[in-house]
Image (cartoon, helix red, strand yellow):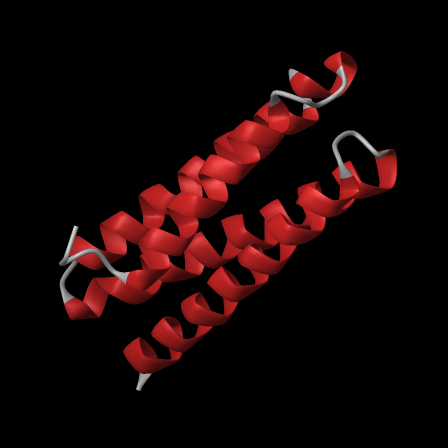
Length: 114
């Protein structure tokens, strides 16, 4: 894993923590909101992997899509917090990790657009 990008490592850790949190979610949220959150994070990671492998002129498109997925994840996490679907402390930690991924993503996108 020495050639893995830091943003992918952080995104993977975020995905792992969300999956672990979802095991403790209330049943009514586990298969709807929490499952959708997992799917959105996987799609974001997929776009990041595609951006990593894409030629420079195509990276921005993948990064914009990944940024949209990141924003959607943020909204879904906020919904989980408001509905108290999962432990609040773990959700705040996940939200902090997602915010850091967003910062990394924004920096990568700015470097590609220059």
